[in-house]
Image (tube, rainbow, N blue to C red; front, side, top):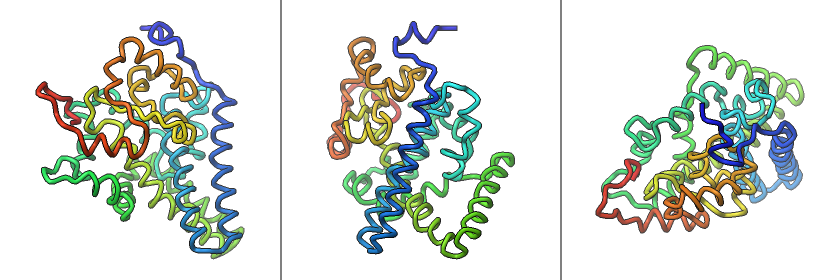
Length: 294
């Protein structure tokens, strides 16, 4: 078996403290934003809160859940599954469901067996008349992203479904006990609405930007703001090449990777949201065969 240290000096088994601090930051931010919105009592404040909460939901339910699926969120290996009620079940999925799908993506990335291709086709990215202005800037915020996210949820296998249903039964009972209908209303307004609207939009953008219309197969987003907010989620190329590196060392690993065997990934560097849009819009296939995801 290859020693991960021989692949990258930034291999790390994770850190229990870093994992708890990352979760505390994101859950704390959601609580503060929701509290401020309730205090403000305005529609403009609520709309801003939905987007802010959705961003931190994405940080938890995609970025940190992703780390846990690789056993990187916590150094204590069993904790990555044990505490899924903090980063998987609130998003209507189990750790086992996410891990199975994500590791399959790693094994088959860019091939016809990659489920991401079916997602791209369903979104409309492969349509001859596909408009990147529509598909990137507008479609995700029409509510489509939430519907798309909903279609991917499942209660199977049954053991996973039982965990999801049990979790939400406890949440509903606790909300009702603490505030009756007001408690349920707050859960709906400050968790479910962001979950199926803004969080789903961030998830949509992430899936598209990671691989679609790339020359090296994977895109890296260098924005310091989004990488701080989303736990270095933008360093996607080095993650595929160095999956043993945890989120808090990906920036260092990226520099090492592109200076050596990953130099080809420099063809797919984006500065951020609008930079990615321009790459998607202006992409022109080269005469040479392109990766499947193009």
